[in-house]
Image (cartoon, rainbow, N blue to C red; front, side):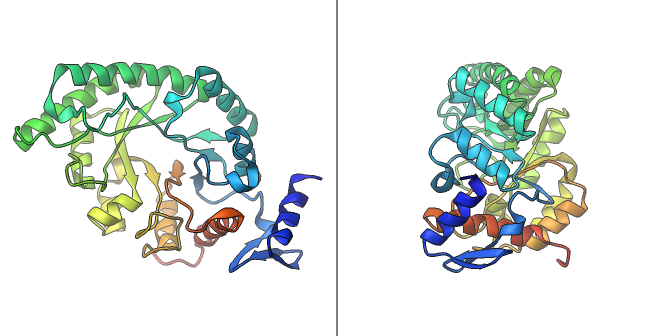
Length: 311
């Protein structure tokens, strides 16, 4: 049995009702069969585990399933921590399928707490060393973008000193990445108010000060909806420094259409600006099981059909 037949039969066996040659339904989720395998207008990148119910636990099988559903990139935050042999297998499969690797994290271990705001030499040295290790990992999967988080506020230092320390560390990281054409993307987060970078204009300031093609912004739509809103305006203000985008609806941090963000309109705006990078799907599935996985795909089909959206 080929995979398309397997998916169709699975939908039937789990309560799906065949609607015709063009579509099938599971619960309230309707997925157009004719869309399966069709690429999207923007380059959305799923994570490990998003399609485990259909593809199984093996990440390589999940990547194959993602490709069959029309996705042409993946993200893997923990790639740096995988064994070298596994990194090589992932890279070889992506090359074979013509897929791109999105971001993985430049993670030196508990890297939020060893904050670069402090200016401590041991923290900066460890960061630079992790950047060097990340170069080798990036070569194994032909990665281009790497996530960096500068860390927590240092309450014993004025803000200006902290900003100078972060800029100094980012320049050192950029010097590592520039010769290899790699881009570290600084992520502005909403997880806790103790994190140094809270809003896009602050990250924009860092990137402008570093002044390197290897130091840019990772714009996470979910986080920025929480901390600053006004998404399209802020994207436009900082566009020249944005090199990577991540997705998640709010509240809930699940797939588009589950929260308050008008993703169809937002994606049209990003598409019209000529964005050709990866759109990382850094969120959960709003529903469990196979139905949830099919609903996730359908949600991206819906918001990617932005021909009539208004910007």
